[in-house]
Image (tube, rainbow, N blue to C red):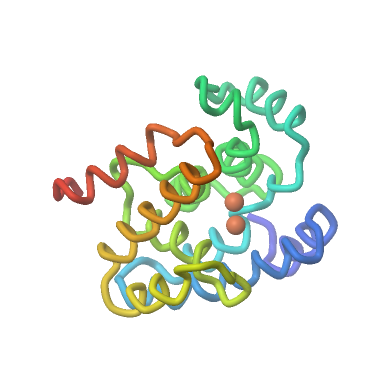
Length: 189
Ligand SMILES: [Fe+2]
Ligand SMILES: [Fe+2]
């Protein structure tokens, strides 16, 4: 694994200033959430910093990278290639940043659409991405309030908000998001 400072320098070069600030915000928020809900704060801080490392790649580049890395591109991902920044980012974290921790890579891979069997770390990164201090959208205060007390409720609300937003935009909801929400409501952990 490369040093923290080197990771930050690398991200500063590959991300816009706004995106870099967001990544730092997610890192700090994820560390707090991890301490609150019993995930590893070191893994959370690292996954938070790196979660959007592929976010500023073009759609074509994401699709090409997905093919190179053997990532399955389903019909929704093909229509909404920016969602691929999560699994492509996880692979970059392995290859470019030499981070082999599967829990960190999995949390990064799952931070856009979620999954039906999210670990506590996965949920911490997903939520930190939604509520870091730079985020400002209708419903963020409610999400922050829930994230201070109840990981499960915050996560259900985050899925709800995401699904409602996508529907309002006339977009495609990825099946993993529906499966993730259903799994929480059904008590599948
Ligand atoms: Fe992202
Ligand atoms: Fe993000």
